[in-house]
Amino acid sequence: MPRFPERLATDRLQLRCWEPEDAPALRAAIDASLVRLREWLPWAMTEPSPVEELAARLRDFRERFRADEEWTFAVLDLRTGAVLGGAGLHRRAATDALEIGYWLGVEATGRGLATEAVLALARLALGPGGVARVEIRCDPRNVRSIAVARRAGFRYLSRDTTTPSGAPRDTMVWERRYFAEPDSPATGGG
Image (cartoon, rainbow, N blue to C red):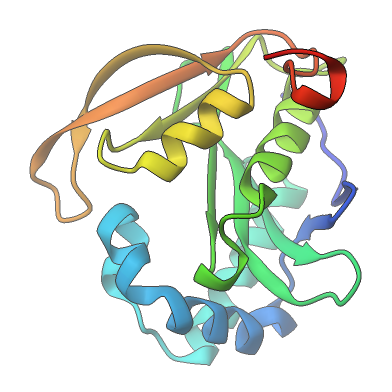
């Protein structure tokens, strides 16, 4: 597997490996968006958890990142350093692929930040020494995640999986196999 850097910067974001010291800011970001997060994300079903427990989880994320097992990033405002959400590259897909997972707090949605984070992770994962493909999986009712996958140039593949509580549900699987910037109005695309 590739070795990924602990920090990435985009036009508006810094993605960096979580640190245990981020736990209070993460707790606040999760708490502010918990109702919405529980609708889509299995890990949110067990929240809220104590800050000390979050710090231990972030320490585990950092260790797994540095061991090249899984790459979980804090999504931060580039100017202020505020925690906006989280994103990561996960080994849930086939051996030649990584899954991109992401979430933003409600105050950070609607500005293209999730797409910006996904594009940065896709570029990283599909770059030199990376994997053959990346996937995004989302609920077909999650119109925001569908829009992110489309804007980030992912191709729709199939549907299948379970809800955060474990019941069967329809899930959309999106894939990207190479990295080239998707068309946008700024570049004359559609």
